[in-house]
Image (cartoon, rainbow over all chains, first blue to last red; front, side, top):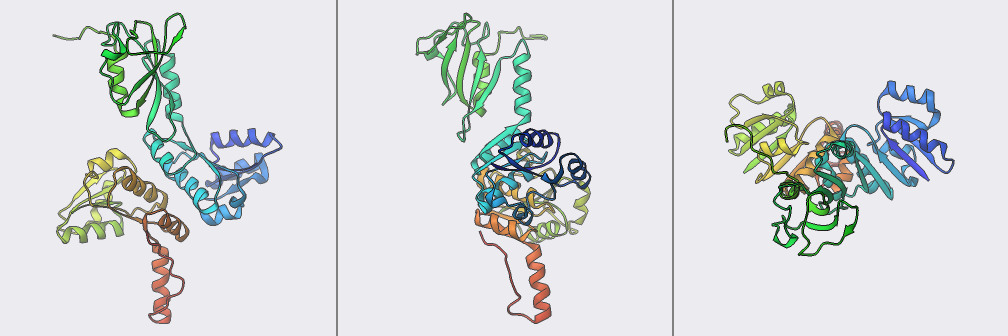
Length: 229
Length: 144
């Protein structure tokens, strides 16, 4: 497989090293900074090309039209988007992956045909949330191209949903509770009369912007209001 | 109509000035407040410090309900990203994008943006001055 990597930062370098070890792959890394490119060239040799990976002439020079996969890993969302779009629409590259710095660009990138997006911010947030003892909503997976995501929520004691049946909850539309896992680890497919209990884990599908409502309903514990209430 | 101009360089400030002078409601966005010095004297539109590739700044500038968005910064890719946000997320009816690189101007013209390349415009004018008006060579300004 012929892979073009745009951006030779730490992630780009690491990926290049990894792919380089696999004999089936031919890899080119395009790095814009002169100094960084020279540094990488000294370490990795011919596979490093200095230049702007969003420029048609340069991509043509590295044979982008026979490329199987372009991965855009610069720290700049605009560059990553344009590299993928030029690859797709000018060179007919069948598959693209873009790093996305600003999480709000993820949906746009997919709308515009970028095959996959990688958001460091989202991955880091999910990991941190999962390690916090009071973590309440963990985004698990964006559903491709739909603006929906799959999230995990922990039913909190005293939350509006605790002790009530799913049909009695005013779930934000079009959210859906897909799975309930009890404290014993036993998964159950929920129905309208499934009652949510403290300690249950809920897997739900929800539009990204309805997440706060879902959190308020299921994953917000009954906290005594502070101050002079 | 309401018009948003991203980038208050020489071109952006001149466009904002002209649009405001013809009685339209203009907001010009730039990340550097110092650039607003280029706006013509008597400019009666708004100037706002902000990044046109960020939704927050676009919304502060009034992108919802704007008739037109013009991306006129020095950065081709920034202009392309911002224009696609305006076109696809906010459904702004008219989006104009400055793209120096003629190839990228053509590609994104095919993808539905109204792009123009100052490189082509400049080359056309230089050739027209050299050969007289008429065929100025390979004009590549893309249409959307």
